[in-house]
Length: 241
Image (cartoon, rainbow, N blue to C red; front, side):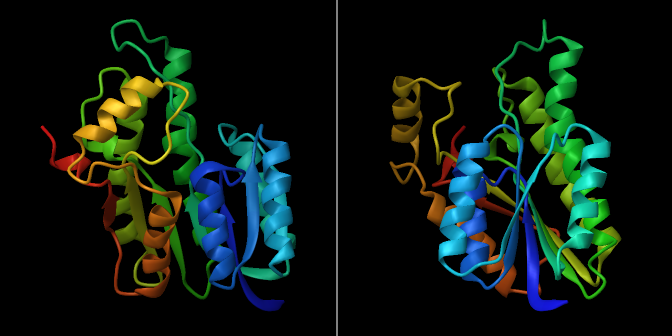
């Protein structure tokens, strides 16, 4: 088996997932890029990393399907690199009204944002025989009651709770932490005017960069005495009432 360890990043085609893949590439990992619908972006990310000399593998799969998750980790077993890092970055953000939210919409968000990280962590831990790191990507919204995003907020709050549970379950050999970004990349669910209003309320008065969020992953890679923690990188958003 190749001595370079493997990092699996879910939702790695673009946005924050891509930034995490790039950070892991710089840190000397081979990278397995998971994606679902963004094939062109995934291939572009893979090409960039390969040009930098990183061994890159692509996997397309629907993480709301447990069978697809099992298949992805079967692919991990075929890759000639030992799994050392899992970053659960894939997520789904949708607006909704808790009074009228259909069960199918609820399940779609919870299945991807909460159940999939649990199942991926379980599969990964069984393969991290020499230790490893699992990082869940949550959201500053996990600690806010966002009425426009009921299922999303609940899923991220659950993911933060899961982080602590898994940190205790997999210690001492596997560390489990989370990164909770604030306002970094505007989603399609947020208008430009609303985004500007939100950013101007921040104590630091600017949106964060993907590089600043990826730096939190670098910290977790390097500091092996951190587990069960939620690193909030939000420009002061969590200070607001």
